[in-house]
Length: 168
Image 1 (spheres, rainbow, N blue to C red):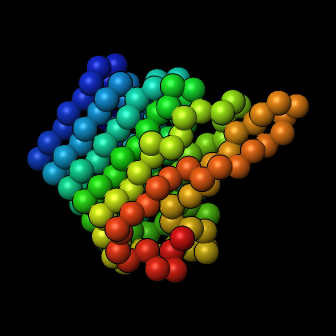
Image 2: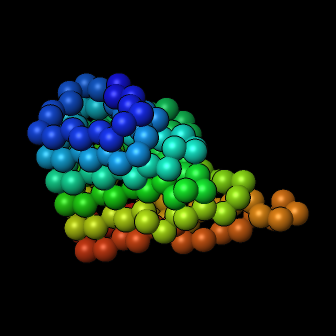
């Protein structure tokens, strides 16, 4: 597990049979040209109030199994400073998701945040096995506003990805 309070750069690594690889990263994080093979459960978990942006570029995710209920491969709990997730030029293939599990998920916040810097672009999605019709990428987020009223917003921008037909 990588846990860091500084900027983190991980390049040209291969992770085999791993789970919970990146946790509570702070600031700016870049993961490039890495392969995640036969891994399970969460790859990235970032909890609130770190204000970080994590970027995955040109990575491969193959033979991934997500079996723990209520977890996702990339889980972000953003804060008011606008935690972000950028996934680009990545390949997702032979991914198995447990019931009601997504590849990317964010959690409900108790105040409005700057969520709109979450981007997924130029990725290829191959074989995705899911046990329910839950979208593989949670496109909407929510926050609790005044008087405990829940507000929904469009959380991600998804551009030029292939293989998502019927999965969103």
